[in-house]
Image (cartoon, rainbow, N blue to C red; front, top):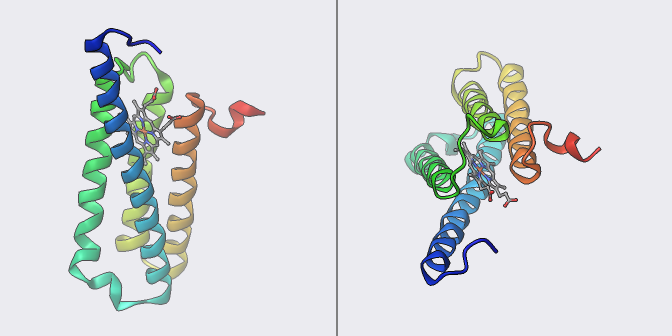
Length: 141
Ligand code: HEM
């Protein structure tokens, strides 16, 4: 435990709250990506509902803002911690894959490939977050 003074205790508590928000948005983001991919494959009209289109933006905003606050609170810079830089780059890849999968993909196969790739990228980000290594799951081999 790094923060033992009363001031420090407050600080670590707020890290916990932001981390909870970060992790909740991580779960919601993945769940949303997964279910929208299923609807995309089924050609479902549910994808066209307004809340289905807007909610992911809200969730991803929470995800990104909580990530930035966490990094600042923990004094972690992506320039000094390659795993953090890897997360940021992989997040951009995940967003790009999502755009192809759910919007710009020209064929069903292209969208399916982008959806699967997006989910793999997401799992990689989780593994980087947990292992604190650019290698992700491979760091445990
Ligand atoms: C889809 C995107 C993301 C996912 C799935 C994700 C996932 C996670 C997970 C699972 C943790 C908890 C790790 C643990 O306590 O063992 C975490 C913590 C964290 N994440 Fe993210 N994250 C994402 C995006 C980002 C981005 C873009 C940043 C960079 C600004 C970031 C910064 C952090 C920080 C600083 C922590 C706390 C690390 C620590 O406790 O030492 N995250 N993330």
